[in-house]
Image (cartoon, rainbow, N blue to C red):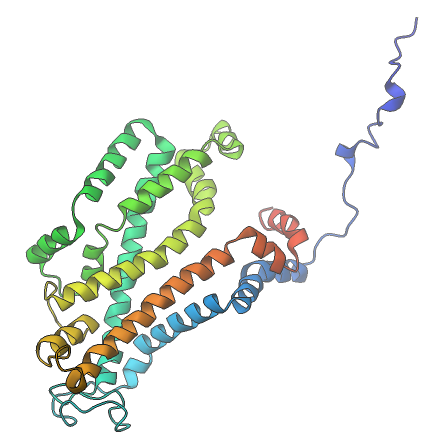
Length: 341
């Protein structure tokens, strides 16, 4: 008696099975792979930035600040006391277009020479805050258990400590005179919020199937965190970095203004403090108001630039927008496979 399956005729044969069908397209050439890589990593972000005025303006302003702090400052003479008339109003001379202070120093060169230190403070503060927050948040979320309790306990303790008194105590002890050290100190109370947020996201990511597959393949925790978890969090970390840099700049200017941080050179906060106390810019704005308002406007521009930059980064990392602007979006998976093969 035959054991032939009566439904065999309805099943696809081995050759016609969908699992045996392979693409008949020609393999990608090196030029095509390079173009697709450039389209995904360079051209697509450029198209998104060009289509959004907020991202364009924010990135252009940040680039301008970096240009001023690295190149323009080298060709701008350092302002000296007695260079020009005292308390000269703005827009009176090309030698001092923004006016002068009580010592006859031009306002514009002061702003330019203060820019490098402000950029260093913002950069160092953002890097330190992000580094501490990322390490603690990811390890606590991925490891869980004892590590989670200890690291989140430390974060909660730092959150409960008022940031300003803590910074004042640390500054009184160490008296930082380097902008790098100022940024490091101001980052101390900027990382706990990021660590908490990242922990929550890692708690979800660690349950994904590809993370479980990595563990089953014998990969250690460091490899999984670096290769699989951290790339998923990079958009969020990058966006938060712009916000952290903005917070550090505001804190530093405020502490310089009230005299907590030692004034070792030109600084926007020091300029406002001198305009307020020495020039009586608030009580007599027609006499020294330009001395106070100029650094305030520059500070406002930098803050607005960082906000717009973070919004632009959010759009750049948005998968739907990326797919809409990628010319090779439908072939992205093939490219990734080729690049990792």
